[in-house]
Length: 125
Length: 451
Image: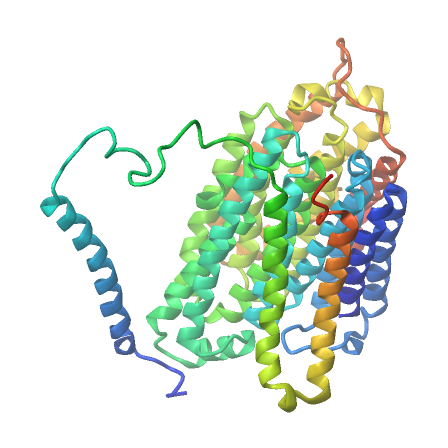
C-alpha cells in the first residue's frame, strides 16, 4: 500500500505552483495599476482601441449555418485525432483493435448519415 | 448489458425513423425498444450472471431492478409525452431518441463499478436532458431552463470530476471495491480523500437538487416541457440517488463520520425549505419542484442510515412510488392549455374528466403519504429504518410530512371544485388514459406487491 498512499508533503510542489500562479496574477494586476500611466480620452476608451472604428450594435442575429458546419467539423476532426494513437499501436492491437476501431467509425458514420439526411450540411435552404 | 445495447440501438433507429416525419412510427420504435429492454431485464432478473460482463459495469440483481425501474418510467413518459412530441412532426423521433440515449446513461449510472464508468454514465444521462429541456423552442422560459440547467449542470460536473481526481490521488484507484477496501483498512485517511468526498458530495447534492444547491430546480422544472420535468424528477433523480447511495454507502461508507453530519444538515434544510416554499407557490410545476426538494430531504434519510443492505430496498421503494406520482402529475400538467401553468387552471379537472382527476388525487395523496397508497409504504420504510440511528431527524421528517399534506390537499381541493369559467384543460390523448391507468394500478397495489 505504501506506494499508493501519498503524504501531504508530496503535494507541496503543487502548493508552490498555486501560490506562484495566483501571486503572478495578483502582482501584475496591482503593479500595472500603480506604475502604469493613466491617460484617458474618447479614442482610448474604445473597445478596440487600435482597430477599425466600431459601428453599430454587436448584438444582432448571426446565421447559425456556419456554426453548424463548424461544430460538425470539430466532431469529425476529433474522430480523426483518435486514429493517431491507433495507428501507432496498429500492430500491437491485432484484430481486436481493428474491430474496435471499425465499430467506432461505424458509429460516426451513422452520425454522419443522420446529419446528412437531416439536411444540416445544405448551405442554401 | 444487452438491455443497454438494445436501448442504445433503438435510440439510433428512432433517430433515423424520425426522418420519415411519421410520429407514430417513431413512437412505435421507441416504445418497442424500451419494451424489449424491459422484458430482457425481467427475463434476466433471476440469473443476472448471464449478462455480458464489462470491467466497469456489474449487472447484479439490484442493478437489474434499478434498470427496470428506469426503463418503466421512460416508457411511461414516452407514451404520455407523445401528444406533446408529435406537435413537431420533424422532431418527434429526435426527442424520443434523446430520451432513450439519456435512459442508456441512467442504466450505466445504476450499474457502475468504477468511477470512470459512473462519470461517463452521468454525462450520457445529462447531456440529452440539457437539450430536451429546451425543446419548446419558441418559449423563452424553456430556453432559459435549458441554458440554466446546462451551465449549472456543467459546473457541477466539473466539481464532480475534480472530486474524482482527488479521490484517485488519495487512493490510487477508480474501482468502488478498492476504494472501499482502502478506506476500511487505513486508520488515518489522507486529507485529499476528504476533500474529494466533499466535492463529490456537493456535486451529487446538486444533481438531486438538495438545499444549498437547489436554486436551479424550480426554474428548470417550470420552464421545461412537462415531459422533461417528469423525466428529471422521476428518472434523473432516481439514477442520481442510486449512484449517490452506491458511492456513499459502499465506497465511502467507512468515512461516514466525516460526511454524515453534513447530510443531516442538508436533509433538514431541504425538508423545511422545500415545504415552506411549496406552500406559497401558485404554479403547478413550481409546486412540484419545491415538493421534490422536500422529497429529496426524505430520501437522504435512506442514505444516512446506510448500514444495512435493506436500505437500498427502502430507497428504491421510496423513489419508485415517488416516480409514479410524478408521472401522473406531469401527465396532468401536460393537459393545461395555458403557457403559465397556474394551479388555478386545474380547477374543475375532476369534474370534467373524473378518471384523470381521480388518478391525480391518488398521486397527490400518495406523495403526501396517505396509508393504503404506494407512497406511504416508501415513506414508512425509509423512516422506520432511519429511526434507530436518527430519531430526531425522523421526527422532523414526520412534522414536514404534516406540513406537506397542507399544500397537497389544497391542490386536490382546486381539482375537485366547480369551474365557472372557461376550462383550461385540453382533451386528453388516449395514451394519457393508458399511462394514467397503469400508474393508478401501481399506486393502489404497489405497496402490497413490492414491500
